[in-house]
Length: 92
Image (cartoon, rainbow, N blue to C red; front, side):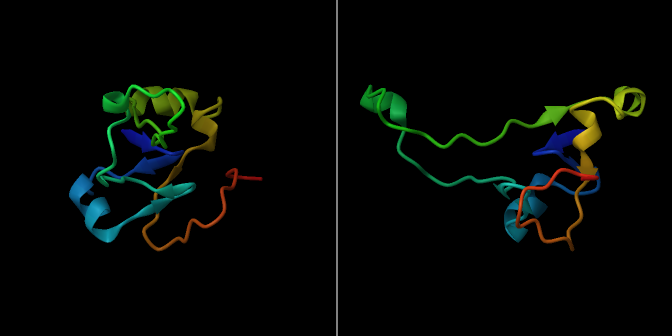
């Protein structure tokens, strides 16, 4: 299973589907492939860079055993029809 920003990405979608549809997650776009300046070339520690949330790859068996424990307890399946505007905690 692939989990991005507390959303379980269904296996029947490809990354291309998310990029083309500009899919949004709980805190913004799920995947951004914008061209930005490479901070490493400037050698300036004062330049900020907006890093994306890292994705997680987990086995479904592990998820089924641990879905009542944080952080898996916050994960929910991605729904293409749902509008993710505010960051919410599932079940709260």
